[in-house]
Length: 67
Image (cartoon, rainbow, N blue to C red; front, side, top):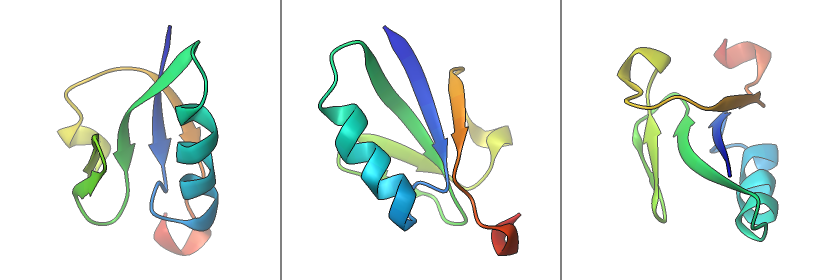
């Protein structure tokens, strides 16, 4: 099982990834990173990488304005 962290999870592409990856059996989203902390369903979202308590593959769909 591949653990995935999505940077820019609140954006359009981040939301699309949540839907597509959620339908797979060989990987899972363990966290998101965006400007504001919160949750998307069961997925915790952190305001920065320093706050992440886990490790995983990072998929970056952040916008240049948010970087």
